[in-house]
Amino acid sequence: MPGVPVTSYTDDGCEVSPTCLTCPLAACRYDDNQFYRVWHRGRGARAQVLQQVQSGGIPLLQASGALGITVKSLKRALAKDRYLA
Image (cartoon, rainbow, N blue to C red; front, side):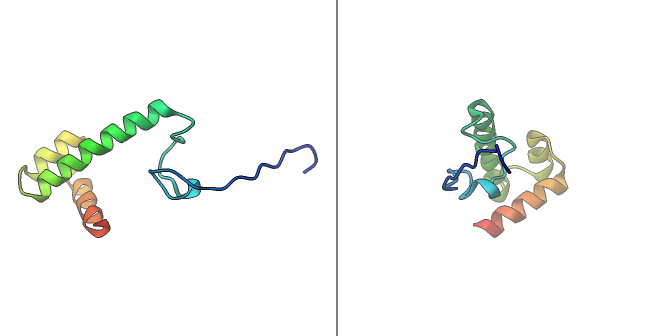
């Protein structure tokens, strides 16, 4: 297209995703640092609760309430974490 600048860059991603095109974030961590900090903080808390559930430390119903999700969503998250581990 005439008049449209073409930008070329290497898609190196960041610690969230190996490439920008496969990133799960709604906003780029470099464009919206506040969004990233909130997302990262919540991710750490989620991982901690999932670890407690897996070790039998807290029941599913209590954990789902703490995370604000349904028990079914919690079971899916646990299955996904086991698959990725």
